[in-house]
Image 1 (cartoon, rainbow, N blue to C red):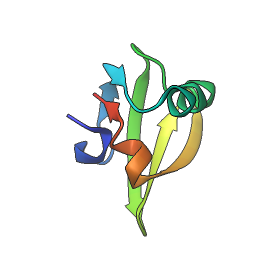
Image 2 (tube, rainbow, N blue to C red):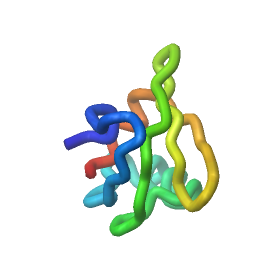
Image 3 (tube, rainbow, N blue to C red):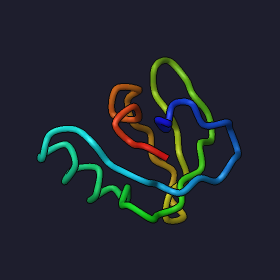
Length: 69
């Protein structure tokens, strides 16, 4: 299921990162790699705030839909 469907505060493992090649590389640089743990903190105004690698990152809902958990 996409990252946007995860419950707030629940830790999940990334199964797949989709999208175009440049989008995947961008997300990988932010830490969204297969096998990595990600926790959704909150959703605000179309953005998803996540905790990954001990950092909080806000990504757009469209980008979050490309990340499968």
